[in-house]
Image (cartoon, rainbow, N blue to C red):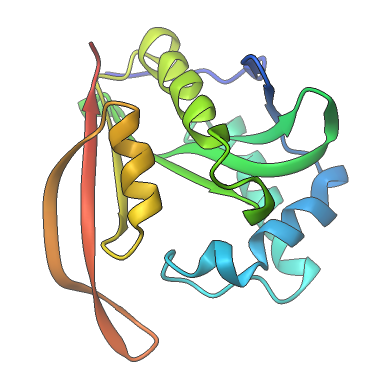
Length: 183
């Protein structure tokens, strides 16, 4: 069975990015990200309205990390390591199946610059080589064309299309499921 250990926290680095631990000092940046309507348009949940919601989120992230149940990285540019521009995580880890779900969000000012592709590739490398994952899954709204494109560009394959399986804001939505196997 998979036994992830996130201690010490695995800080990751790419050409342009540093993927580091989220702290309470990041609260304003995380609130900005989690309250942005454009970021949340395809996530099937409401954006944060109060700073307290994000405080609770960071507290839960810390608990998941301490229990080795999930990990989330702050995405920052190396040239500005104090400014969080996004997040990327492994969550919904199914230890007995060596499988995890990946999730990510990026502030719109940094969309279409290859940042998320760079972060996904680095996190996948960590997941497969260090955590011992066999497969990684991504679930997204069928309307999220940009996210589907970045997943495909990082080696994910569409495995499923669930029709009207998610009820949000008074209507049923379709869900795409992508997956990538360890290579």
